[in-house]
Length: 112
Length: 117
Image 1 (cartoon, rainbow over the protein chains, first blue to last red):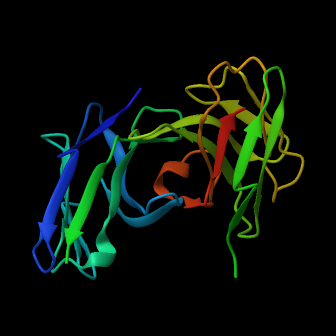
Image 2: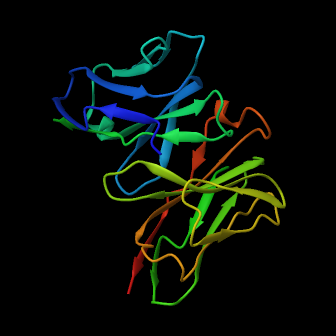
């Protein structure tokens, strides 16, 4: 079953604008991770945020986590054409069986 | 360079045939995973292994089999019992075993695309 659901399913923005993607999940988690997937390639890990953290930054990426709302957001600032990809959240359920559960992804297109 | 190598990149299966997808890693990771990705979908876990000679079923293990005889290798066999095998298969690895694999980033190969002839 899919633990995470990304929103929106698809997003198109102009280069230079900021992109925000959201992830909602159903059960309590230990950690939440974000990954990027370029077309036809494997996933690349972007950032991991623990359940006791509220915000984390990595370069142009900013991730927030609201455990009370069971949601996370990924913000990409000053978008570039190379950011065009699908973005997935993955959760590690607190009472799960030691595996990650991936959401369905947001397809981001940056228009030059 | 350390990483995960999946082969072949494309694979075609005839009806009634078993096929094996290769996954090799030189990251010295304990845990390895196989995922299936269907068009426009997220990843679904097929099997995972946290240590050599041990593996567990994921969410969609029926019609698949794996082995973990070496730390570096985690091959996936798609058997004839898997009636809808057409998909993109991704192998991943991570550090850690036992509790806590979920707090480790997973490193992915570039996938094998399997189709039916």
